[in-house]
Length: 330
Ligand code: SAM
Image (cartoon, rainbow, N blue to C red; front, side):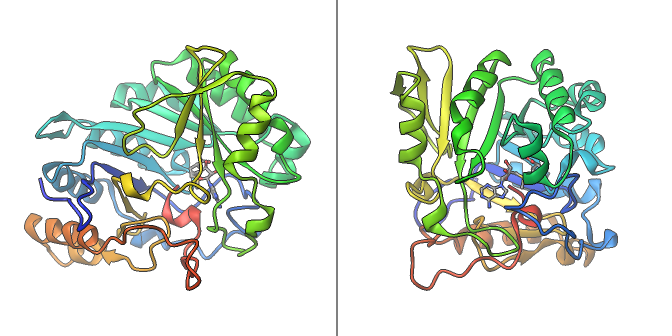
């Protein structure tokens, strides 16, 4: 097991973007007209993904999260889940999770369960149909709600719901979102808005910070911090004595890079060691050039070896990555 970086961080979590395409156009993620999509021949195929995951598992990866873009619009989703959930690492079978916007999830759930998916995170930034339409540029709230309801009834547990909190957009909904999550046996998690949009519209002064999210929640709930966060991005709090919990992912104002155990693979086979990395290592070219498992392993190790101590958003020389969140995989 060798995915240990120069700061001693052991990498166990591989996030794989299956596609950069999405059924929504969230204003904080993608321009209205979309982007120049990754050409289809450059997308990793299921065998290639399986091979990279197998080598990663031998190197100590224990969890794989499928994301995008929107993983539910990848034609290979069920096949990929089946192939990678069958992989055994030194510590046992891999755990396969997925982050999705939930659209068309009801029709996919039986296949995902059968293929071996373990759990789901569903993104929902607002419960208001008009706001949803303005924020995502699509009138699909009803479909997202159906997806969440189907997930609630499924075996894919624990269910987590994610919202990016934005000033003047949904900051007044944090309490409603927590109550909605509790009604759906889910954990609500609030994400600080990060500088990852392709439109480069992010403005720190406009961002709703962790402190403000917590202050809004504390006006309605008694929150108690839970310990033992490990490498997880979310800081967890019990609600009114529990057992319900809420999470805050404060990547900007309280970065958790010191415990980061994540490595990312883009849909076109580039390895990234951070959401904010400006360098990628090309596994697609290596695979299609006939690379051995050892060569794949060496590329993964090199990506980890080059990882910086932190994402550097606060550094004066911070430059946003060229790719947006849709292509990096959130
Ligand atoms: N389409 C799927 C979904 O909606 O969850 C998966 C991909 S999406 C890029 C993953 C997560 O990244 C979503 O929860 C989304 O809200 C979040 N995200 C996208 N852009 C972001 C940004 N600039 N700052 C913080 N979170 C962001």
